[in-house]
Image 1 (cartoon, rainbow, N blue to C red):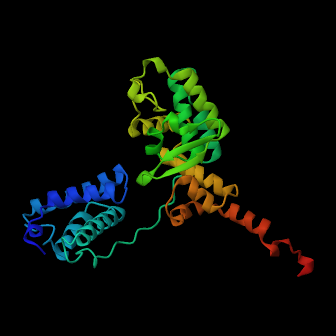
Image 2 (image 1 turned 45 degrees about the vertical axis):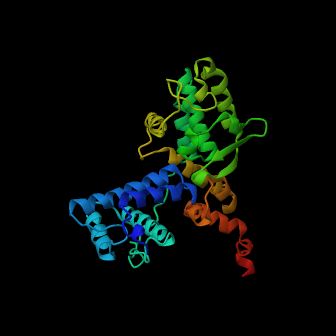
Image 3 (image 1 turned 90 degrees about the vertical axis):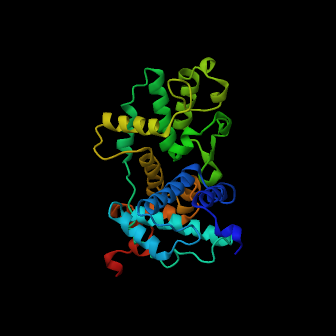
Length: 312
């Protein structure tokens, strides 16, 4: 290991890691931001307790003590994410020959139970949509937003970045740029298409939009891009008006999109492609279907279910 490498600072190591995540890994801005925040918390801990250990010298014991310290005020899921972040960070340092070992390798990740997604029924979604006042332009926009989230299963980050150059009305297709800057094509349903066109033709004043935002589909009152927080507020307000008690977010519509597809017979691989999941194991969480539905599947498709008592 060279003398130059021995003096790598936390700032330089984290900055280089951010570049690596963006350029080499193609990770999303949100993921990079999340990892950067976790590393910043580690630095704050080292400074608070006056632990003078560089990225090259920090020990497994120090990291274990940090994770234990953090566990007092965080959930297991947060601890798992922290360990995953540190694992990736030190993997990068060993890959670049800045370290000879990864101090996180021997640290066990806490087991986190898989949380079932928060899913709305089809009736609840219809009620939310019906409660939106579409007598004015913002109401039409909000209806189009909910129809797009539920009709195509988009992430909120994908929705706010959606551009008209990626909306193909003739082909009924949306071209989505998802996590890791990966592209996928998602069919646009008839209802979603209707409300997108209505929003474009009746509620979006193109003459007042700055050229920078001309191609952006969903705009705020100032005719600039919608924020993720604003979309959360729009969805929650619709749920409130529909008197839905459970906690609802834009992701609830994505969960509902996937679950309703599977309940109505869609295969897991197709749903994986529609959602843009890299691994099908991520999609498998949507198979948390009701006992009633599973019983119907067994009765309708298993050959033994066709047998009568007389034939036994």
